[in-house]
Image (cartoon, rainbow, N blue to C red; front, side):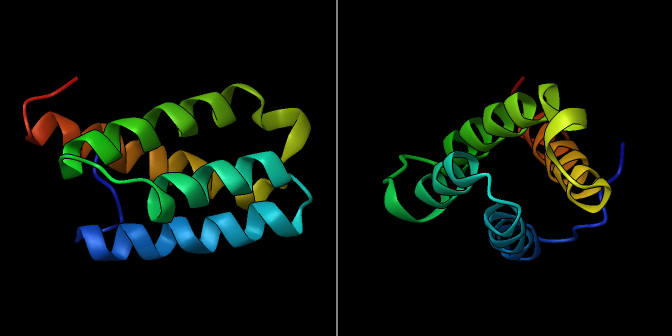
Length: 93
């Protein structure tokens, strides 16, 4: 389950790009949630942020087929994959 992202910085940039894409597709609640998680909330640890992002991506994935474009669906899956993989490396579920 390897991700294309090599660093957290790459991943965070991709989440920003995904947030913009989701907003352009008029999924404003999802865009606001991702933006708030990444930029407006204070986290104790990076793993806590990754956990919250993972939960947001899982929720988005559940509603994926009827809501998002194919390109956006792929990006959501990729971001979810990264959060799961990175948390496993940290010994978290």
